[in-house]
Image (cartoon, rainbow, N blue to C red; front, side):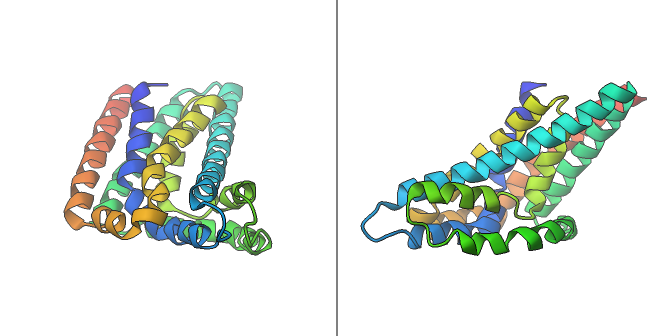
Length: 224
């Protein structure tokens, strides 16, 4: 797996963190505010985000392993190139989404709502969080929240070539989201203002757009 894929996944998480604050920031803030008064908030947030990253890694391993298994059985390696082209297109769509040029990925998120409707009721059974360890399964559950940003990173994990590389890509993506999510409790407003600043989002989106176009062009040349 090219190291650039890990960098790209980390960058997607880092630059798309404004979207993460919108989707998961409220949950992280609730974790921070809902901790017992006599305990520090940071361990709860760390375990919550650790659980979230574990879910990302699991999803990435499943996607990467399944696709690699299908390619191994069928011996149709060219299909992997087509999937990589689809992943590059997803990156381009994500760039348009982050830059607020086009909101098409919001429709992709609706697909995941079917699964989320079955999982979300479980979160109420995990509250209140009485210890930092209790925040770990809570974070793992919220890692399955329907999110166009996650789905875009997952498309890269699916074409990583194996389960381990799929896991690594999703962990790199999760690590990219971590700084903003950790800051939710202490500097939420300033962080959110920066990440939601239109100029910042447009610059971020252009970086991702260029990477997506270069990758798509590279794959296209291999196909033709």
